[in-house]
Image (cartoon, rainbow over all chains, first blue to last red; front, side, top):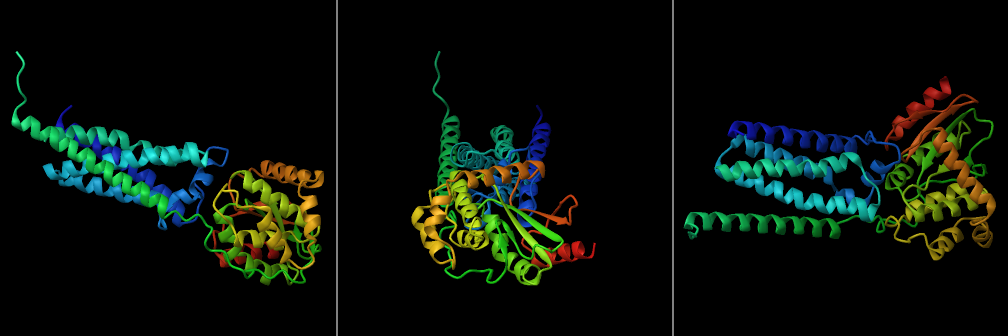
Length: 134
Length: 235
């Protein structure tokens, strides 16, 4: 794939991540329920004490991370590519923790949170390839 | 023939290792921060009730004048932090402005989707309802809400909370909590929740007379609750 194609893919995945994290952040601050499959998993996860760090919603941290990756992608200098890939890698590690918390500790799955956790993996893959090419 | 990697390749590999290590350290710091700074809800207990139920009639899970035509139905899980928020922020207005003057009845319906402590708490609350003290006990539980499914709904906590509620027979409360009557009340709440398609808490519904109840979404805003109830009282 061309460099331009890779950047487009990275932008697409990052925007998808921003969309999901943005939706969860909006639902949190507007005090709205997220659209969820039957069973209450979303509410259980969103209302759990694991959904915030020092009062900041985890979704908001995700939104800030995706926004930073987007800014680095638009900058597109070698150091920006390295920073974006590093940030995505941090995201993958932290998302792995969040997935384990959902499955093992809270014992409920919020499909939006899971999508938010998982979309960072393809972002990392594309950003890594971009970094290695620079 | 095998060749030695160039110094550039070696530097590149080293930089990848450094990046992975740095990312792992940052992620570990985030996880540690998340666990250490987690608000388990156990530190904000207040000894003073935030809602005054004194002198308001209660019949089981229903609070207020039985002749009031408008009823506010609340679906709640006693472990749910948002339900605690609703109770602290909105319930004082509901009780003072609408229930106490006899304009609106309030009905509590419990859900247990968060886990075992939800059911234990709900059993105690419905047992208090058998003595028409359900509303005082649910308020006291929210004030002392602990970390989800940590076993915070202990007999000791319940005995302390119940002892502070005037007119509540604590021994009878403990005898009733595992009774068939309370089990049936839990089942009835679950049936209602299914019929009303409730999948989250708190869920609020307004019922005017014998009409079908409808959901309202007010967040933690007492003014939004007032607007919804005023609308129902006019309609």
